[in-house]
Image (cartoon, rainbow, N blue to C red; front, side, top):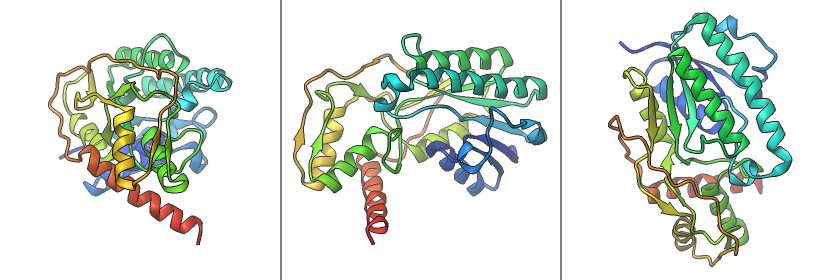
Length: 267
């Protein structure tokens, strides 16, 4: 029998919600903790949740490229994420609970976000937890400063009848639909894996993504002039992963959810 009681830190985020839903669907108990629902990890005591079986550490100051590269947020990213690390890893050290830390393909020493993810990875290794690295996990998000590229481009197509990229679109990414991501997270929970990169290894340009969305919605594309940020390193391929939802299927799902959002918003 699998582990039954899960503490999901960041359970109201895009990935956190999907993870909570999946755990409930496989008949496991879930306690979701998130700033959005009124629990501030940086100031409130986590020890009230010490009797859980497993901890999913997803809580983080994060967003899409437009947020992570905006200079006015860089200090907040460092302050908030180091404070979250200090509070959560102290709790994990004292309780000795098994856990998984959600890292990123962008974990590197050249950006505040990347540095803090590396810090989290090192802390996880010392405490004997698992690391899962996300590679551009996408799902439906309400547009905003922190939303990601695929829902943003779909909303452009639906609301502006065109797609305008901030870059020339030649930067490459690996995209995984959110449901595939969380199913793989749960699948690797019981493996003896120090780090797993949750991705399929397929590189796709942002221009290609925009073209797929443009064709689906019959809108034009305008490319930007500046080069986008690329971090083209190959994923760690150690454990078998399963991906069921193609990029086209994922875009179709998000387009339907975006239309539902607009219908509700403008009723």
